[in-house]
Image (cartoon, rainbow, N blue to C red):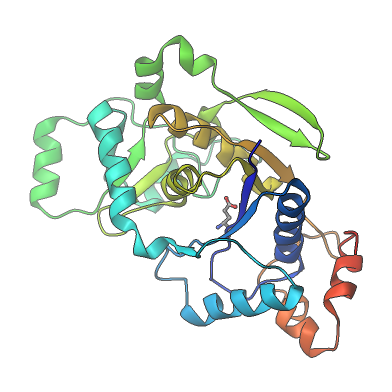
Length: 289
Ligand code: GLU
């Protein structure tokens, strides 16, 4: 069986120990399986991503001793692909234009339960009570109002019928035990797939690229588990295969908090500067040498 996995960082800051853990787990799994380890730069948020952080990713991973197969895919070079995927979903009638501002959405969503349902977009938007009339939509477009393309859970349910309830994915734990998990895309509500100006969101780009690159195993942090439920729905709608998922634990510091890009002292660059070796990093994050 072929095995293709990837590490897909966003160049919005320097990589830290948590990234090293994720990258090494994926790399080691690919090498153990005689498969491929791909590197993808997820830089669709052009306001937050910087070229110097992309260069630092190559430097840090090489220093860790990781090598990747094939050429690197940089998402900002492929906006047309993601727009095409949204177009396919539009043709299916499962996306709609949402003109609400982020603020209006968070006000509406204040009563939404926190925790599992909170996704990459921060808040859960359950969708409009009624679809917007064609006249109102046209008037807003004529006025040049900003909008986001959102995936409608309700329309997807209508389209897929019983298949919606049957959506599921395989979660691999400890490298061996497989568990079938029922997908509940409604956890994240109607997620954003693209905006009038920024053409693609994380959800559409990641699903498109994992399929395009033939990824069979997605190894990533458990903070993205809720997103996986939406990705499984997108895969079904776009007729793409669902990879096996492994959501690993998030490393935490002495204070019990997970590492974040703001912890400057724990960036790989700072640790390297301080004389820490790649072997020390492996030991520190609990991976075999
Ligand atoms: N680009 C995402 C991040 O930086 C990871 C996406 C993924 O592995 O699916 O956290």
